[in-house]
Image: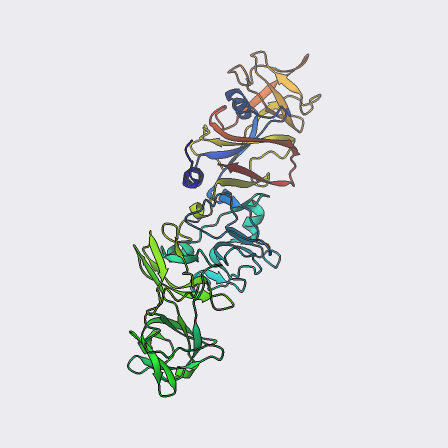
Length: 520
């Protein structure tokens, strides 16, 4: 049996989304006052939906949203990180953060790193400049979250269901997405062993590529000549305003007098916001195993992050993600001086770059977050519309390409026949009226002494009400002076979706928010 990929399902949902928002011919029909049995998917049942329609409301672009699973962030849950080698269809790899205040904003984040399968303890953080600063939320619990989009409370209230949450396009996120490497996984983070790091502060400014070091207590600098050749020398500076960092390759190391030093390749003071030549004592350094990334793209750089004992590599922090990657490999550079027979028990770290989706995270939110449903939401109200303010309806249908006798498609329409009669005496709602031609219908509304509205007037006949024939109620005949038909061409349109529910009573001061959810 073949596999129907997520992209196929998403493409189907997207196709229908575009059809709904870009066309001008899809309506929500309210139907059925006779409380018939549950609709089935048959031509006869669909035809009855059209025949018993009471009103229609055009679906506008603002009435439609793509939908993703409603996964609200909670502490203590192990969320699945994005992995290009994993089937994420049924995984919780993104979360929705609910606002702390009433009527606030909801934010959606994708998990890029879950700290090697740890439980999430910190709620992803949104800031007003999150896009400008890279779009990521890096938290104390070791999680890295990628910001995807924001939805205001009004839209959440309008579209969210128990199982689904609306998608909101964010052009700024798509425009800043990068097809680089966001994550490099350390596949044996529990078992790699023997790596070391050294940290401290610069003890001198950099002169001719050489810098002297002040090593932090508890860390040991091996001053054997050039033992650190090929490793990474990472310089960082941070204050309340400026964060600067740069990685270099060590080309030499040792001890000169009583001071330790390293020689670094390609140093340029302009790499830093502050003048490192004047403020060198404020800069921290790390000597680390060097990460080499090779692949179809360019400029991705990462540094190793150690676990607490500083003997194992826990993860890789990306300094720059690069661009243009569709395939890549990564490795830790072996020390220049390595004795494989030393019996030290060292175990190399195994690295695997995780390639971002085509275009980068956030480029195609619908596909990335497995959007597989649509929600059509609209208010049913009689205020300023043709929707009747009386009686009941118990079906909703999504109908494509209905036809109208008018030149334009109305925003709303009343599908009842309006009959001006000599008297309404003796009439009650729900009563059947007919004419000798064979046409009959159900009284939906009685208005004053001379007007009645009739629904469900179709059946196995083509006749319509005729003002030259009397209207019969059992043994009583009543004259008709005027017949006003609906602008809707009866039985026209394709029924795409039908839902049944307990009858809803209409009134002039009542508005119903309805949601039609279609899961692909």
